[in-house]
Image (cartoon, rainbow, N blue to C red; front, side):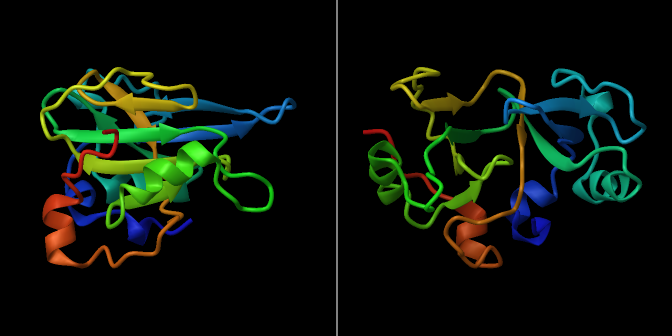
Amino acid sequence: MSFDNIPEPLKGARRWVVFRCTPQPDGSVKKIPLTVRGTLARCDQPVDWATLPEVLTAIEFCIGTHPAFVLGADYPLRVLDLDHCINDDGNLTPLAVRIVSRCEGTYIEKSVSGHGLHILMWSSGRKYPTNPVPGLEVYEGAPRFIVMTGDLWNPIPTSDPELNRQLAYREALT
């Protein structure tokens, strides 16, 4: 994990919480949102949020294992969440290939499991269903957390000012 890879616009936002990600016997991961003080965090309560440096410090002190970004109607970030789309050989499923090919130049990271992808882009205003196709979830608007890894799928230069300004406005799902 390299949290240095997280795009600058997100790094500077006070919309972060700590997550404790605990592997389960069935191979899944239990995710618990926490404040930097170690209490349960709420995605609809800005008082529970912190900066990324504060969250990373809390992680250093073993309060949690990963930073998570808080999504909401007041922040125009859209996340495409592809679960179980990377096989053990590191190859993408056909759905993931189709979506990733339309998202060239966007920030794409592997999920905590290492078998999923998060694709981040600024919302264009066009609304999509939460589950447009099996294996894909679209998060935007409603308050929720997205656990971040900084483990890039597509090594892109996040210091590029144009990329940081727009991430991407492509209509990835059309």
